Length: 56
Image (cartoon, rainbow, N blue to C red; front, side, top):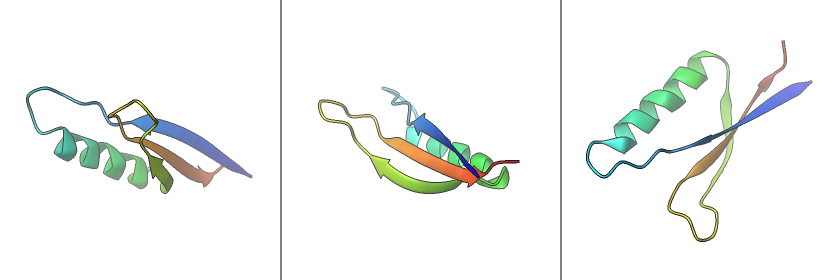
């Protein structure tokens, strides 16, 4: 059985949001999550990522 999570990159006017998003992805990876897909919804600039892991 698997479980899924959708996360969104929070955009900031100032600051390094890419580095913060990378840290967030690495934190999830340490918890066993893997990236299954990434996309940008229409009419949006936010990246959404679908994560997957085996359900405990």
